[in-house]
Amino acid sequence: MNGSTRNLGLLIKRQRVTIPLTLRELAVTSGVSSSHLGRIERGERFPSAHILRRIAKPLGFEEDELFTLAGYLSPQSSSIAESHPQYVSNGLDPYVARVLAHESPETQRAVIGILTMLKSIARSITREDNRPNGATAE
Amino acid sequence: MNGSTRNLGLLIKRQRVTIPLTLRELAVTSGVSSSHLGRIERGERFPSAHILRRIAKPLGFEEDELFTLAGYLSPQSSSIAESHPQYVSNGLDPYVARVLAHESPETQRAVIGILTMLKSIARSITREDNRPNGATAE
DNA sequence: ATTATAATTTGCCAAATGGCAAAAGTCAAT
DNA sequence: ATTGACTTTTGCCATTTGGCAAATTATAAT
Image 1 (cartoon, rainbow over the protein chains, first blue to last red):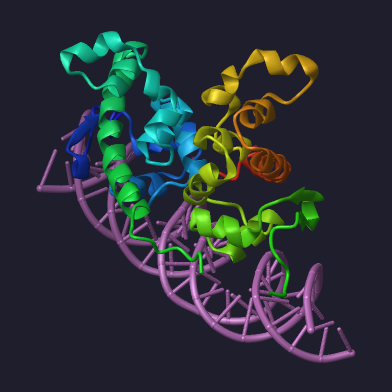
Image 2 (image 1 turned 180 degrees about the vertical axis):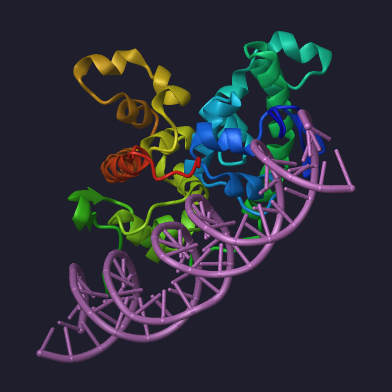
């Protein structure tokens, strides 16, 4: 056969991260359209709670972890708050440590890639949340 | 002064629940417009994650509890999963028990009211989530 | 270099969210 | 009954989300 065989370390340019999952594959396992995933990836769209929930497991995250990373939950609300302390000592991020600890090597790399992506999304969302106050409250 | 004095047990008709908070008051403390809160209340709108986060504290909920009640997180993901067992024995809902235990009487009544409301919202959301599959996945 | 196949991006659009302002109830005092 | 101060509802609309289908771009085998 010709054509690209499969799964050769996809490069998500905007995030400068190499991950072993294609958008299509994530689309299939999560049920979210690949086009939308692509736009989320490069910050053109912000995933709603429903979408976030769909992609959590396929990405190797606990739901609340992903919600926290995306800025929808504050850290002390999620299981991230009480992550294993033995990993913290060597400067490794607790989120990453916890997730990596019980995931396959491929998933581990995928997680790191997506992690970077989500943090940038989280920043925009949080920024947006802490605006002076665009709210009504009359 | 004349006019309605204030806060006399507002009745949220569609949910058949009496609560001591007006939409306006919740609007002020949460920063969400009262019109939108009203529509959420009677199921015409579904609160996004941002909105849910804003109203959690004013309602006496932990963020992840409210997310779970709204169907955005599955139960085992949130702190609801490990709620105090001593309250469970007498048939009292653990969610309610946990929240009521450390809130003022007024808030306690408010919480019960909103709890009912959110459960119905949660049902619609979950139903929508478990559809055969409206997803892409090509 | 060409080509076949798989991956991402873009254009377009339907549906939903959420705010503001005006309208429509409520209730208590006159 | 009318007024006055409140609360909720409605109409309208700007913005966002997210899917589909058609480009476009990348990769690997020829």
